[in-house]
Length: 562
Image 1 (cartoon, one colour):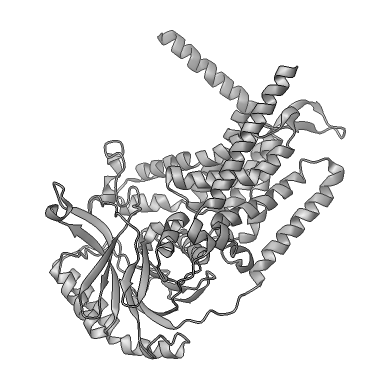
Image 2: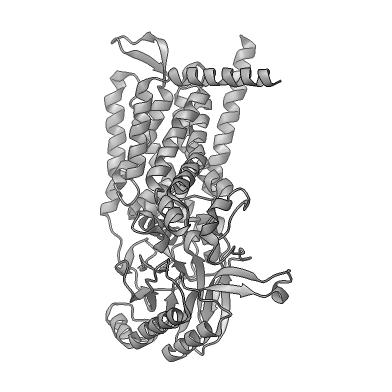
């Protein structure tokens, strides 16, 4: 048995080596080019115009990957579609490189804040890229399977946009990490991004991939048709990209919130003195400057329902040990709400005793608490979608080496519901940090009646990497999809007011402790996407499945007839 196993392993290695050697070097070069362009379209580089061509080299590589054994008329090597295993490998490598280039900040988070040594932090990033890169690989595999009999690539080109959206949907539903969905690259394109009110961000992903397919098609059709098709594809890209030059009229804002950017170091060492000083400084910043901020709001166009007033005070998710059960935290915040005569939302660590939870021990939550103008703690939202390795440790025995990420607070429990909190006449849809990257979850708040969104976040974990800007763009897309204002309060930045077009109408510089008067308005209107969710993405998944089934059925009939 041992000899047989070794023989099979050796044979597999030889077959894999042969499969790789059969891939033409030009396909690998195209994969590298595509991976670079995919990285550049997201912050910090933010070269969004490349989104229209970033995937075209990858698609060409998949459709022209291996020598056919004959030469073209001009003497060049005739290349044909990659076999399924080759297509998976080419796209998988592209996915690994893309995640390494856009999510490189995971290394810094794991090393500096998770307590991992350099080798283990690098290993964590590498394993992350290997895992999430599988979705690019899946796209390559499905595209290869969709190629028609005799290497007819037209079926694959038609299927590609549907397949890509289906894979993005899988990233959300299977892995739970839909970070940097392709459509997010066009968040500043107001004319184009408004389609998300119907389709969600997946509709923009589809349009971007559709143009990429047209560009790729120009390089796989006969040469005499190439120039015309390429010109048409680039013209379409130019027209769609020109939407960034079109601005929409300002949206009136009749309310104002004070968003406090705490700027607390993530690795602060907490003592009783440090805790009390930090809390005192934050309450002083909020209350003492409130009259100035109110005057500023009155002159900024955000006149509020009560002229010169602040309707809401928001403190972000914080690295400070602010426990909802701690009187040292509760009383100063309650007094601040009374002094300000405003509703207050603050990030905190929610606790539930064993008697309250009905379980053997107390529970800890990443929470947002609502305090009334009279100082009463009226409601609490507990974060539902937790961050693996940051707020809980999946498979603790397997990943015990990463326990440093949760050593400060232990494992959080997930919340049970996404319900708006009632702040007097306003209904607040509150989601915390990482939850803003999940379009299908955020829209539930608006569907339940939230009139304005509030996002609490601590982006200090990301340092100066591009993650904070990537996170902001994804949050902005949630505003567009649901036609809602978003008050984004963060610990280190970017703290901002975001209008329903996804524009940041007011923001604070990063890494400074300050308050921002954030204009906003309330609305109860719901978009088609808010009401019906990811219907477009599921439709693409169904069409993709139907195309693949049809492909194999007709392929089987063709073989039977021979």
